[in-house]
Length: 301
Image (cartoon, rainbow, N blue to C red):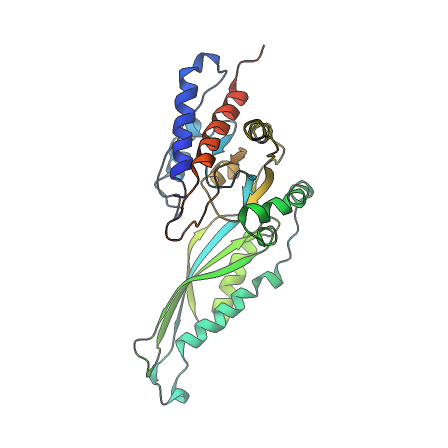
């Protein structure tokens, strides 16, 4: 489901507000593109590069799954790398004749997993304050441990391939690593350290995706509208201001200096079989987006 409900919520909100556009004191722009999942060049990146004046605006409201309990004002920066290790190879009965390319890859992976030890997080005061306030809600919305993960440098290996047969020493191994850099860490320094690690092990790598971590004002006007309307729709619900562990197209607004707020349903089973969102949370998202966009754009006396 991922962004299906968020996209539909945007379509409904845009339609409702278009019908009362004479009550709005500004322009409302709807953007619906593909390639967000792999950070490709032909979706939002294309619009930012070629139609910037039409899509940037004063703020962005995005329906990515955040859970009703949290509203996002920033996100970690993904650094995806593909690493290749090579060796002469040989017969498995003679491990003394060659290095094992899979073992070399394992050594590189272990070094990457220790990256967080080299990069302590130094958060700006305003960011730290918002995340301190949101710790309990982060664990509630994303699972226990999320509050820690969002403020940490993390490494995951999503794919690994090496060797051709059980009794042969692998001559090649390739793996893809997903490194997430938190706000408060210099992402360029992390990228340079990754390159150094790979070089020390005699391997090679390519960067598949790289985006710096990003955030804008956690106490922005649109943030206030979303939180107030969420509570209006469901008394007692006050979404916490958080940073996302995953990446979204909202990063492109923030990187270009425009606040981008993400508020959507809970991502039950996201990335796995039978992922879903609840109908109640979907309808809640539609209403919250419509009301918040109206509050931001409505005519003032």
